[in-house]
Amino acid sequence: MEPVQKKKLYVEVLDRLMAAISTSEFPPGSQLPSEKELMTMIGVGRPSIREAMLTLQQMGLIKISHGERARVINPTPEVIVDQVSAAMVMMLATNSRGLEELKEVRLLLETGLVRIATRRATAKSLERLAETLRHLRDAKGDQARFVAADMEFHAVIAEMSGNSMIAAVAKGMLEWLSRFKRDLVAVKGAERLTVEEHERIYKAIASGDPEGASVAMAEHIGRANELYSKLTGGETG
Image (tube, rainbow, N blue to C red; front, side):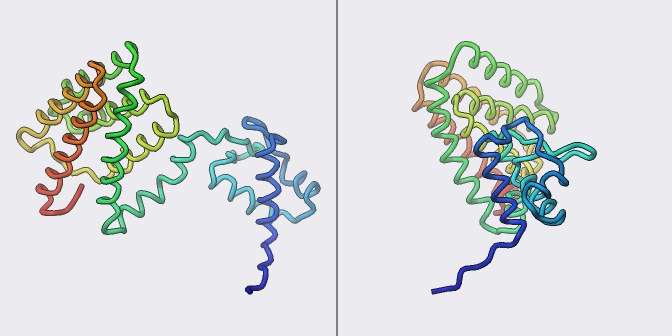
């Protein structure tokens, strides 16, 4: 058996603070005590308090502003996904299989997601989706606007699921993928195909056909991935 490892002092402070936050001693939106007060309350020095606080900030549990006491953040799915975004982008940039694996995750997630969105669609959410489709059509010829409208369309479908965790993961994934997209707007027919595919997805959702929407989404993502590979000589982007 391996000997029990003694925790570093700041880790013990971190455990104490996390317990206080999770038990609503310091609920979301509240301010933590000052460093000096925490030193007295916990009985440790300033370095341990500061290291624990910085770790809490990196975990997305508190926000530290200059001249103010740290404030507890509500750990929403969006906040959690945002916290891992930098590491995810780094992994995609350094892992030769990372981007391909993320695309597989996207295909699995979005084809299932669109089924849920179709079942839960409302007149209001369908109008929002139709509006993003209009934005996509209007943005042809403008790369930045076109990519933004493309992402907006998929983000609205994620929101239509009514599941905040799914929506946050889907939006985060789109952001990560967008960092690696190649310039495709100069390719004849690429924008037209993208608009047509989005129109098919929208029509399936609007007609209450979850299976049709899933098939249309799979064809769209599969075609886009294949095109990216061809244009980059086998690379993905």
